[in-house]
Image (cartoon, rainbow, N blue to C red; front, side, top):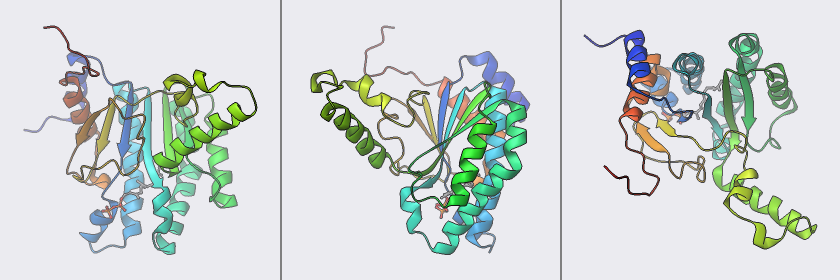
Length: 250
Ligand code: FPP
């Protein structure tokens, strides 16, 4: 018999510490829809329900931060119809979930380049961020119009501007100062990266921040990713031996 989500959760709590920060590449919405002869947008819609499940599961497990990849900078090149549908879905999520997220104690932040967002989308982003500002149970970072190389380039530009303005000496630029200019600065690095749909790729996601993260790839397509799958990933993480490049004495 396959263990229930509650069994897995109890095991998780007994077995050890849960990762504080989990990043997720939510992949496979298109294939999920294709297999059902549905339009790709139906896959994204089903994927939105999985985001709700993930948030709940994160809270139950005691994870403090979830950083999820909802829309990459490269995704702007998808057919306009799909881009519009994804943006509409994100706005729908904000409009329908804000109250529940607030009640759950979730603080939402949107990470990425906001300049290509429509006025509507931008308003929705600002709305959910201010509505959920007091959330202290779980930080939910939604990466939208996000690309890691662009984020790194932006950090370099911000530092250069400070140097040019005479506020910073080049010799004072170190890893900590660099990391402070990344979107993720307040939350630090993820401990675990989950990628669904069986692809072993980073896809320009959190290139700096994932330097020492544990990877967990599951063949499950994102719309099918359940609480059970999330807890399985955390249990797998708990069995890992994290060394951060060091030798650990037996
Ligand atoms: C990847 O699947 C998924 C995306 C590009 C979008 C992710 C969006 C959601 C899960 C829904 C909305 C999210 C929120 C936060 C409300 P794909 O389309 O690349 O799938 P494929 O590789 O099978 O084609």
